Structures are given as C-alpha cells and as structure tokens.
Length: 437
Image (cartoon, rainbow, N blue to C red; front, side):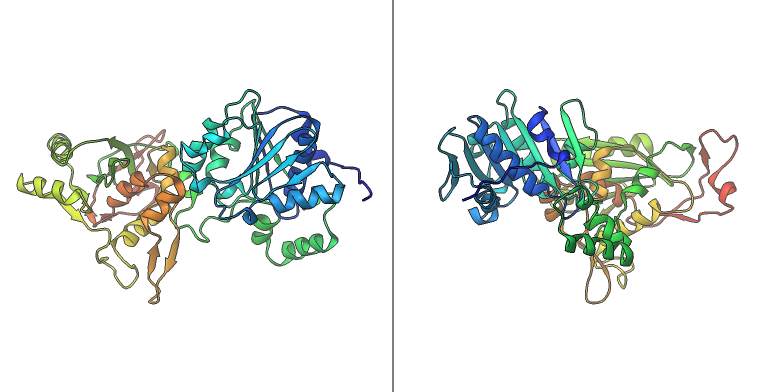
C-alpha cells in the first residue's frame, strides 16, 4: 500500500507540539475534530510508548467508540505497525496501546485502570455527565498526562465546558474549529452549511458554528434571564418574606431554604444530614425570628413529617406543597411543579427589575430542566430524577426557589433600587403590584 504523508491542519498542531493538561476543541459539524484527533494520536503512538484511553459517556460495545475511525485512518495512511484486537489497539513497534471505555458504567474503583494513561481522548464531550467527569478527572494523575476533549456544545452549562473551558487557566488550551477552518471539508458540507445559514440562522449557529442550543427551545428557563436577575440592583424592600423549603430526599441531597421578599430573592441556605425534627426546629427558629408571611414546604418524602411537626406547633404561616399535585391553573399546567416553575420563569422575565441571589449552582439548577407539553397542551417538566442524572446532583436550590411561588401572597411593599434615591419599582414603572408570586 502506498504510504500517505500525514498533514495535521494548523489549528490542531498544538495537540502534538504543546503540552497542556486540558486540550479542548469545540465547534460545529465538519470541522474535522475527530479526524484530527485520531491522526494525532496515531502519530503520537508511533513516536514513543504511550497509553491512550478513548472514552465517551456511553459505550455498550466497541462499535460505539472511535475504534473503527482509528482503524480506518491507520489503513488510510498505511500504518502497518498497528495490530487491532477485539478490545484494544497496539503498536507492535513502540508498544503503545489504545483502550476504550464508557464512563457511565465506571465507578471510582473500575476507573482506576486509567490511572497510568498518558492521554485521554473524551469523544463527544458535550454528553459527559458531571458525575462522570468528577470521577475521571482526578484519576488521570500520571506526570505530564493530558486530557483531550472534542465536543459540539449542546447547552450553555455542559458540565465539561463549565469545568474546563468556560474560564481556562494557564494549563488549558481551548480552540474553536468550524467547517471553514477545515482544509479537507467536502464541498457538499460547505454547501449545506451556507444553505442553512440563509434559511435558518439559529440552526446554523448551533449546527455549523457550535453555539449552544438556543435557550428556550427545550429548556424552560433562559440562562440570560437568570444572570440578569443576579445583577446587584435592589437595596431594600418592605415586601413580606416568603420562604421555600425543599426537604432532602436521599443521603446526598440537601435541605434548602430560599428567602424571597417580593422582587428580591436574597438568600439560599443549605442544611445537611439533619433529622426530621432538626429540620423542623430550624424552620421554627426562622418563623419566630423573621416572621415570614408564608413558609412553603415540599411534602415529598421526609417533608410530610416536618410539616406535621410544624402544624402541631401551631404555625399558621406554613403551607404544604405537593409537587405532583394539581395546579391552581390546571388547564395550563400538568401539575403543581410545572406551575411553580412557570411562575418563577415569569418572575425572572418581568419588566420590573428583580434580583436573585448570586449562586452558580442555583443558575445551573434553574437552567437544567427541559419542558414539554402533554396531549392537552399543558406545560410539563422532565422528572427530577432525570435532571439529577444529567447534572450530577438534585436541583434542590431551584426547587426551594420555585416553592416561593406556590400560592399568591398579598404584597403592598415598596422596593428601593440601589443608587436611586427615594425611587421605588412602582414609581419607576408606574405600576402597583397587588399580589406577588
């Protein structure tokens, strides 16, 4: 077979010529990321002895991996020094080895087989769960080891993007590569990209330029709205206090209290490993000291026990909320959970300024839930278990926040804006709020 000279596109040369702990390449279709990664790793395996792990979130068989791509590229270049086994690839000259893993089936013990690898190629990095990343990252500990990530971003809060690429440090190399950067991009792909650009600019941005999918297309709450709400703008308000309490369900979940006064959500408080009585005592202290107008309590699992204790103590401000129960407006919302989340979203999008506690996990939680509609056209949300599986934790902070919208609470409070003397929201917008969700 005639040997072909390997030419790595300019943007991908740092894969072989520079050392970084993390090398992240992202972009849209036809950017050549997979080909460039495969070619670079084959070259690296021929230069010296190294151990390379090719991983993805789910790999039910070797067919789901980049095994075939590596085999095809080795054949294309005439690299006859590689031997292909059913579960691995070896270079018979240097002794380099490629192994293939699916991360979802790995735990902290199983993944120890990756401790000695020199390079990890994370394929389809946008699909990696936070839980998988948290196990993999500290396992790759060999001196001068590297983690290579190829990804087409899906969401603004993709776990690997947030952990590595959103704010890269000196040990991280991030490079955007699109079809127009690929010297080998087929003309047919260029045509399809330009056609998409003309007919559907939003799809073009995501599919061909690698931008995260537009928020709102499948997510209920937009990250831009949350970030805007987290800007410091409210100095004081006389609106009544509403407290939402999301009770821990399992050992790794936390009980979370959220404090909101009208258009100002100012505090998130976490409680860990407390008994039902201890949680009830904490809420008792909050009621006695802060005199909230309402305390909305999640009745799921341990919440029912906390609710019974508080009602037995005579606290009339406490209301129990069943997330799966009937919505007040049940012709629009599938259940109470969907209604509360929708009302929280309306609060975030309000014309009148609102302020939300500045907390990264709260932002992630709020932007994590996908929406759908049932056969009656009512808003329905994906299950909390599915959200937890994807982001690696339960969205407790968001649930505590949306609980503050469980029922209308009369609000005649005045809100003072930061830096505007004697001005209130009502005077700025010439509106008077009779209720506050």
